[in-house]
View 1 (spheres, helix red, strand yellow):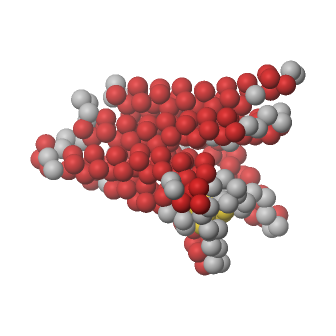
View 2: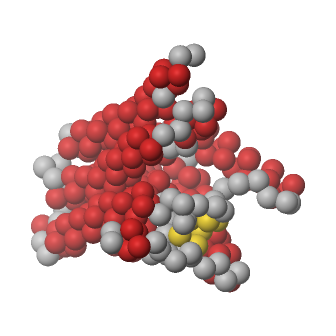
Length: 253
């Protein structure tokens, strides 16, 4: 393969994710909230594909890193916020907020803070890649946050939960926003010394990809995501994992 064309494959995958993020926003504004959430979850499945393709083709580049961050901002930052705004205060809201008109301000606050913190998280990542590499995330990734927001909505709708459960979504987004810009340690998914743990991880990853591709069992995806977040952060905190000091460049973000 010609050296220049090697870079096309990973960047094309990233552009597909951007397109799916825009599709999710379009679906949300037209009232197709479930379709919008599944589009974001498809982006979650594609999230590592561009990086994997770049490594296999020896086509990693600073340009690709920046493009991937911009894609993540659209798909896991802006799209979930747009879904929440359209679903609660759009032209076809899923919940009638007229009896509690003040709650629309909670929706705006949650959506705006979530998108801003996703942007801050990605900007910080771009300038701390060397310091923050290794076995841990410090602050939860936007991919996990966007996936949890969409899985929560899909699960609540699937089981017909009361409107109060759906109305809790903006509050969940605020919590995830804070976690994104925090420095809490979260282990990255990787092979471990324990064979049993490796089998468990691989099996769950396979099931997540299968269910996500088939657009089924969002409750399993939600449970898996929350379990990873809870168990992973608890492990990191209890084992005294400390984030490395930020560089001078990172401190200016």
